[in-house]
Length: 209
Ligand code: AMP
Image (cartoon, rainbow, N blue to C red):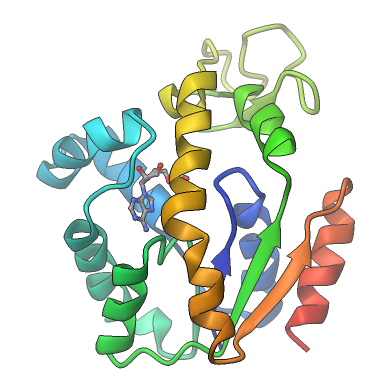
């Protein structure tokens, strides 16, 4: 099955993707993760993307379309895949169509902006091992210190409050129109994000039936 997970940044698409990936034994392709890896490694693409990511803006369409074109050509995508964070604009969705990629379902995880802002601004990450924490929901044992490797936790630049607001604005302006794009072909399934992650997972799995 070829799936797209839609939803604002911070709506919990990554967690849902992980569960679906195990459930259907298909890989998750997250453009956000691929871009973050490129930032870390300092590759040409990473350097090009950095100013957009740090500002909470979208990386230009041609860059992400190129990433997806290459990734979907890999062998592990033959039996299906989950796109997490792509497409994020109508031109990206059109490019996917032009590549001849047939999407079976689009699952949209709906979460209120206020909830997303609380989740994202409270997030802290470990630059050493990549572990993720939350000041309110998943605090480290010792304030500011990674439980796993002892490194000092940081706040991602794109999780700063102003940047989060910018990312939500970008979402509403550029990504939300994709709901109508996919609803037009009856592919859209809406899942209301729940307080408890396990409840959202249940609804997401039901949308795959
Ligand atoms: P994410 O973790 O999915 O929120 O992605 C982090 C950042 O990577 C976003 O704020 C964008 O700057 C960039 N990014 C990820 N996916 C895309 C995409 N499909 N189109 C444009 N930019 C993207």
